Length: 159
Image (cartoon, rainbow, N blue to C red; front, side):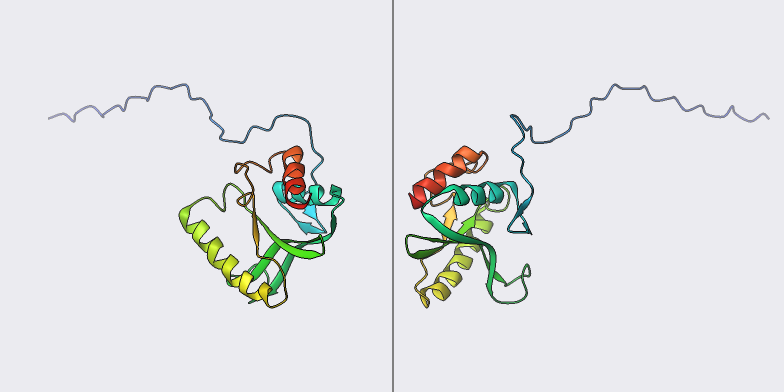
């Protein structure tokens, strides 16, 4: 009796593959964004908003990423405001809503709860309610994607 011949595996055919890279396409010239506002790391939309605040003659001053109460900064339960803007003799807390972190129903619900807690705290000191940017403005979610649109938002809010 003889042994059967060993099985020969077929070599798989090579299929041409196209690498698809899912990246945001950036068009236009370099804006010179640094990734920082007041020596703290910032997203592109936060930096554009800060630049718009700097340009506006009605904004006397602003601070970036102020921690108000709760546990340590950047931990669950900590209450922070992206921008605290002083304009027209009043303080205006501004929260910047990006496309990723503030679009689902759960995220929006968490934002409303956080705003309610902050508003209760701020009301003791005569500070205006939290403004969501661009939610409280009549622009779309990509409103801070260009410096011109950020300038328009600040102009609409502070004159």
